[in-house]
Length: 144
Image (cartoon, rainbow, N blue to C red; front, side, top):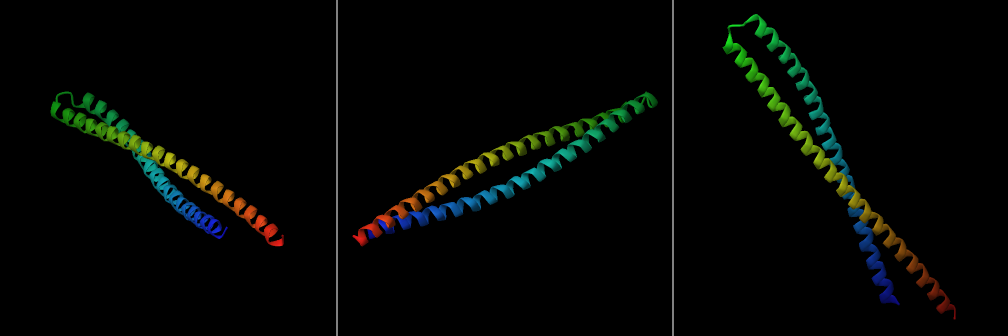
């Protein structure tokens, strides 16, 4: 009975340590999730700014085209700049997509960690119940 009680106590301690570890990991995942959300928000803000700049540049290109009919060099430079901004926009969209994938992965990891934590809590409760049962039987046995 002493060995059984010691083994249960050891198992209970290991489960409590695992629960604590999972709680810490869950907090770390939450911190990463907040950080990733800040990155996503920043990318979305920059994307909106680039769209405004792109629209402004597009309008400017049209105005310059009508004003400077014979200046092909300037028009080509403006179009190159616009293409560069569009490439930057595409790069930011790729980064946004990557950040969203990371956020989804992080959410999945968090869900898995929560599942493990819940399982550990159930195991702890089961061990507490078994311990109480053994203690009750021990009291009965001692009284007899």
